[in-house]
Length: 149
Image 1 (cartoon, helix red, strand yellow):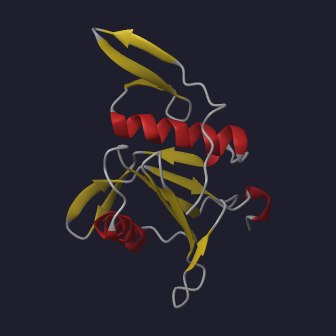
Image 2 (cartoon, one colour; image 1 turned 90 degrees about the horizontal axis):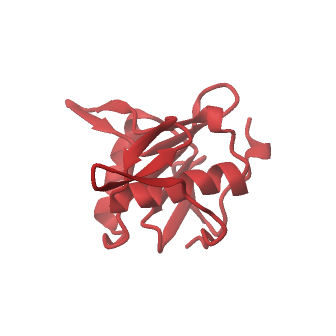
């Protein structure tokens, strides 16, 4: 399990029509602050501010085709060649990370091959290095972007 410290991260918030909204620095728009969005935004800020992943190489909630279904991934970080590098699945804090969550992430991975997988509900986070699909390695820290090829 990873230890992600969100304590130094401040989200930009506002209320609009009685609903809380958060500024998404990647999509450059205000979005409704649901519990899952809260986790996604903390993770995005962590990627950008702490891990120094380039914001210009991050995509949020883009549509992909998974079999016959249209789905949306939460976050993908691309390498410098604009190939998917890290795929992140976010869950609301009250949703336990389970085998079902991992299967959802893997279904996206089948469509969009990424070296790293990450799943988080804000309390827990797991990251795997899937460079060798026959021997997946669970990591204790997020991969640094400086090592990206």
